[in-house]
Length: 66
Image (tube, rainbow, N blue to C red):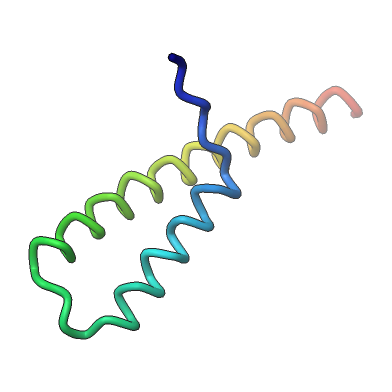
């Protein structure tokens, strides 16, 4: 079974969900917080990479127009 690749939009939505959960639950235990922060770091790195790749693609397209 193949795992579908996550999109930028899905990653941002998951980040927003993690943030909302952390803001809503002040009594979350430290293990849960730690796991959520680790997942958020992975998602942020993914989003950063996606944005960097998009920026490179846009620059290439702009260079071709000139």
